[in-house]
Image (cartoon, rainbow, N blue to C red; front, top):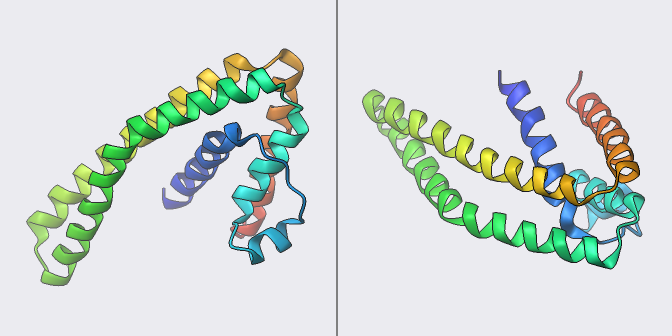
Length: 151
C-alpha cells in the first residue's frame, strides 16, 4: 500500500511539474547535487522533450498557478495535521491518532484530486504528438523510479 502510494505520488509530482517549461542543462546526478531531486530533473527534461510553444507554456503556467492556489490551504492543513499526528503518536493517544490519520488521508486525496484535475487540463493543451511523447517519457520515468525503489 505504501509503495503504491509512493508511486502515485511520484507520478503526481511528475504531472504537477509538467508546466514548468524549463529545460534541463544538467545530468540527474548533477541536478540532485544542487538541491534538485530526480523528479525535478525528470520534469524539466520532459518539458524539454515536449517542445512546447510559448502559448502552451503560458497556458500550463496559468493552470499550475491556479492548482497551486487551490491546493495551498489544503496543504497547510495537511502539514498542521501531520504535526498534530506526530504529537499524538508521542503522547500515545490512540483515538487522536485514528482521527488525524483519517483526516490526513482525506486531505491527501483532496490534494491528489486538485493535481489530477490540473494535469487533465495540461494534457488538453498538448497536441496528440506531445501526448504520445509525454506518455512514453512518463513510462520511462516510472520504470526509473521503480528501479530506484528496489523493484
